[in-house]
Amino acid sequence: MSTSPTRTCDSRHPAPLAVRPAARAAAVLRFVGILALALGLAPGLAGCGRRAPPSPPGGAPKVTVARPEVRTVFDQDEFSGWCAAPETVEVRARVRGHIQKVHFRDGELVKAGDPLFTLDRRPLQAELDRAREQVRIYEAQKVAAVKDLARQTELQQKGGASRSQVEQAEAEVGTLDARIQAAKQEVERAKLDLEYAVITAPIGGRTSRALLTLGNLVNAGGSDPLLTTIVVLDPIHVYIYIDERTLQRHRAERRKVDPDIMRKHISEARIPFFFGLEIEEGYPHEGFVDFSDNRIDPATGTLLARGSVPNPDTLFFPGARVRVRVPLSSHEALVIPDTAVLTDQDRKYVLVVGEGGTAVRRDIRPGRLLDDGMRVVLPAPPGEKGLTTDSWVIVLGIQRARVNYPVEPFDGDGKPVAVASAAAAAPPAPRAN
Image (cartoon, rainbow, N blue to C red):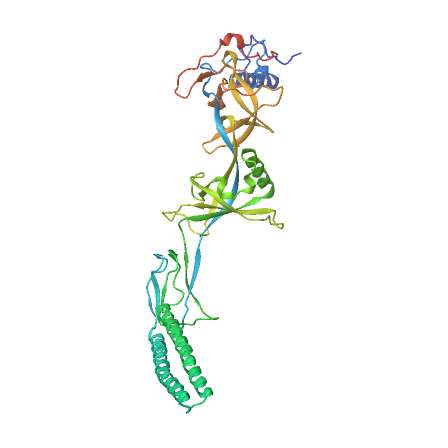
């Protein structure tokens, strides 16, 4: 009668695997147990009451630690906005004529008063000359009418003319005076038309392309075509839509600072905002809000607001999309590197170096992520232990640290961090078989 061999601590000479199937199975089990013990995966298989080593081979793992910082953090809201020109002009002709010359290049920066188009001046010059000749005609007729009035007046005194003839002569002189004045006004209008033959830039800015070029006929009046457009680029306006809830929060914060703020123009509040283009990091540009609409759109529940920003280098173009951040209020808060925050299902936590140099888990309530990669830590709920400025938070080497096991902490400069004696905080021993 034979029995299957059992695994014992004194089994230093195992039977050959080829002796029996039962012996082969026992040897395989022994090999698996030794391998699991060596890898630290199943310490319960070691048997004989042995314990797992208190720390990984080579001593406690080295980690980099840092203390939480206290910063002044701004509560702020982020919006999507767009740039718009403060002034936009559609250039159209005031008179009819053929284009003789285009003075600008498409997309060129121009100053107010710079010529853009020149129309054929000859028909307009002819109209001016005709108006001037009409003035001379009326002036010559007036000379004759004045002499006739003098003659009729003299004849009346001698009884050779009636009173009605004198009055008729006076009316003729007055009519010619009026015609002369009307003709002179026509001359001035013709001068304006001749001046309008040269179409100039009403404002300074950047032009669009020329929509009509050399030789095209330009009509003035109801069918006058668009020649080009000019937009002002410096300064530039940034528009955003603010939702009603955010607007109410901002107004409440502003009233705390100035109770009469709602009676003043919004530009007097000097509300700053920060923005950046889609390709830029963060919000590097700053401006001030100078306008808000007078009502909330009931269809969208938003209010249109605008800020003005200097743009001397024409970095911003009308229509460009921007990311806008508007600060609300400021307060002191603890911040830590976001890389130190770990996740356990629905909880966030960090590892801190506790007494005895052991890694201790500390649950936190994370706040907003700052632009430099630091994470705001909200105050811990009542009854829970949160982070303080005296805590040593593990920021590098987190993968090597194990909760309730010793670590060797170093600061950011690579200098060892003094901690309490490790003898008072030995890791718990695993349960023996």
